[in-house]
Image 1 (cartoon, rainbow, N blue to C red):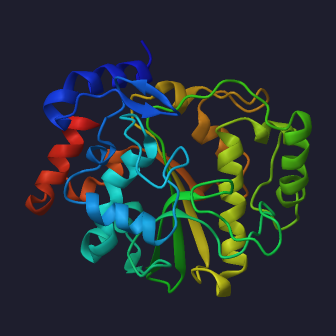
Image 2 (image 1 turned 60 degrees about the horizontal axis):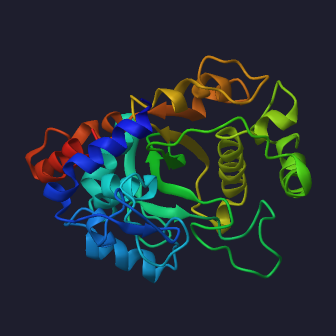
Length: 312
């Protein structure tokens, strides 16, 4: 049994008692026992209304393409919101989370909406050429979005944007997204950026390896981080970035299987670090490690109890 199957079984065991919901909600027009009938119950009670309003106000798409949250109990987007949305208005906790990543953080900055963390963040301009000129990017759909993003100031005065990609039960087959007509479109967008002399990617394998998931997504977010800091006056005014993949400890398939054939096969973190000019800018950590500073604080006991019972 893989991690996805075990988490699905766990979700079904606790569904009726924990969510007070019979399941059989719709996902992609098909009813499943592991999809809540009342999708809003998939969000933690204390952030539910505010999170739904935030997504609506900012025209953010809920996975897999809706204006309402998914009832799918294994949704990584919902997991991200449940874990991190409390940080939007909690400056103290947000700074502690940043300092857990780097003790040199001395201040947490506001995001585009004046909170301390933003969700499904896109750049102000389509630097990666993913939408037609003059068109707006849709947060959460059809362009490179980052699940969550924070900014903070270091003691040396530099401003850092922290890109957070949230994973839950994802696993990827060996599929080359550079193939076919769609692949040609992708390569036309990204190849020149990947191999630009100022690119943060130094790649030591053939470029098609970067079109295998999860590296295809990691590659695009790396390019986005670079372009947002390069054009910082139009963006979050950050001087540099840190890129995190948050992956549960027990999702071994995602952590350690490397679908790209020519990359080192010791795990996605080490494999991607070998492709970067500054490998320290990319790290894989667990949800618990990210939230370690608040886990034992009484103020956050109800949240931690919720996360522990449901996810950890």
